[in-house]
Image 1 (cartoon, rainbow, N blue to C red):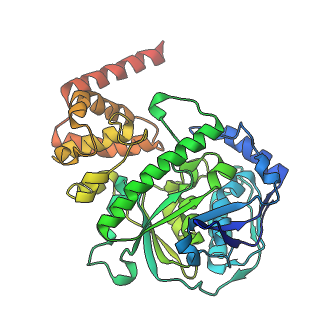
Image 2 (cartoon, rainbow, N blue to C red):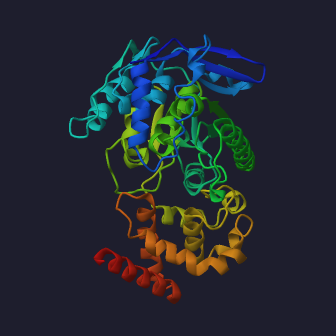
Image 3 (tube, rainbow, N blue to C red):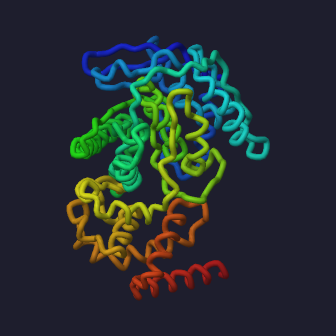
Length: 428
């Protein structure tokens, strides 16, 4: 069982905190550690101080914090943000959630009757849990804001590019950008393959998050939109990983914590048009449209930003001056130029003739040296399992490169040789 207490608000003069006590049974925390061992391809941190000793303190709990001037937007009268934040945790551990604070009736109805039955079935081995507690169908009063996240990646720049245009009706036109610090940075110095202690890890990711927040602030300033900053202890004190599996849940929870501000919130699509897979063991982007529907309330509507491929989005923002100045797509932070995301983006920009336009954020000369390797990596990635993120994006990019006849001959030769070697290895 996960029991969520009544939220309350306090401030320290700099940040205002929305906090609720969270009581997680020992059976549930043990089940979470067991679940973390079963789900692969995740940077888990459940082997050190888990469950955290901090849970035993009198003032423990889950919190969301905003700069103190945004205090009035914090939603202390609903349990919505906390329920959504802990929902994936509850489903993978088979634990019911009880909220002592009222929850939005619309949200609870959709979670209990659509989302949970779809994700927790006898076939996949997950118990069908329930969300328990009082509900209300009264819309929560808000300022009518329209927001979207600004991570400075392709997806977020595409949302800004589209939904800030004059042609967008006022109730849906962007009024705010957001930066959420809740565990999205999970690979500090990934290219160095360094092992961090828990303390070092969160000190490093907090520092990296502040740097990305500053980039988001500059984009917001030049877009003439205010930036809403929200931070949380959701990853540090509860999840300790699985961001890819929980990203949409986390984003929605952060927006729900400031439910007094937003009436519409765009969840920037992960760029998976036509791909839908209901499973707790893959990323939440596989069913992000369903999550947007089920996690909306009577007063805050989550909207999936688009059904456009990552290649198409890159084309759309290629002439955007802000993207040319601030784009950051890197797995390893600050556009290393050699990770898979950098390679994909650079290859796309080259194919569409916009490579030099992004010289402010990429080392173009280095890419020209690595060009053959970049195409080779994309050729290899397209052969991966159909559910693999890299395979989906690589196949889309491969189609474009083939149509434009721009795949280097040495990349093709290396790829064909690698296929022969794999075939021989399978035989012998």
